[in-house]
Image 1 (tube, rainbow, N blue to C red):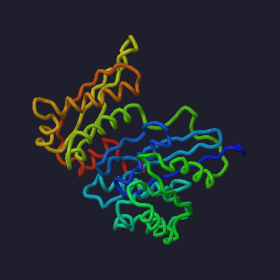
Image 2: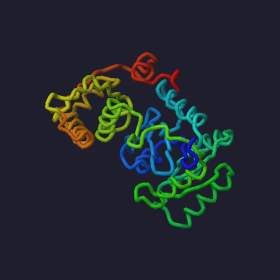
Image 3: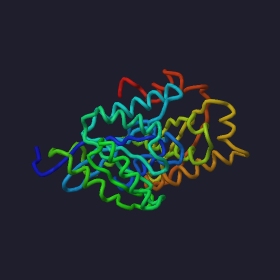
Image 4: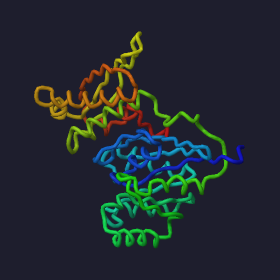
Length: 301
């Protein structure tokens, strides 16, 4: 064991839309988890790996915790709650948009029964006056659940550099689990599919994006090593959703494709030839076989 190096696993939990993925991407220094203003953007436990000379922290960014409406939602909730048992530290993220709501209370109740070190990160502190911020900090401190409370603004970067040193205090000495140049354990296909799904979230409204799933059918680099061909299949739950995703004269799906291709080319540092296809699988989020085939298997949690 390395007596000078610290390492450990940290789960990031919280209700939807509090900024968990934004905070993770900021810490890692690159995009490892997709971000949108829609709830439950993250569906799986995403690993982001922070490295410096003194420590390695493996973060697990979990789906936002809320009451499930379908079998996929039940999987996502189980993924979030089980992660708390599997990590050394728990980093709970809340924001200043409201006082402790019903879902926050449920999360706090679960945290009371865990023996892990618990760090609270209060995001969006830039959106309220200082007096109000102090009240919110005192309110969470009075719960007696958290070992540390860190107020931040992920959007502006305010106090974000306090997170890693705070976590590091509570980590034990140990070896690295991943090489220094690895920022995530996601496969390339998964990262590509998530980037495409993020653009669907950005270009569509309400229920439609949550009924979509992206599978990469083909990922092949051409012989000249300068162009990558990607074929992606977008599943949706209704024919009406398919029409909306296509848009008038194909404008919406074209916009999704252009935005995804731009980001993929920046990530891969190659020209990307991206083809998107649409297919309807009715109510797939309530079909266990479909959910399992898409990689959401409760047995693996």
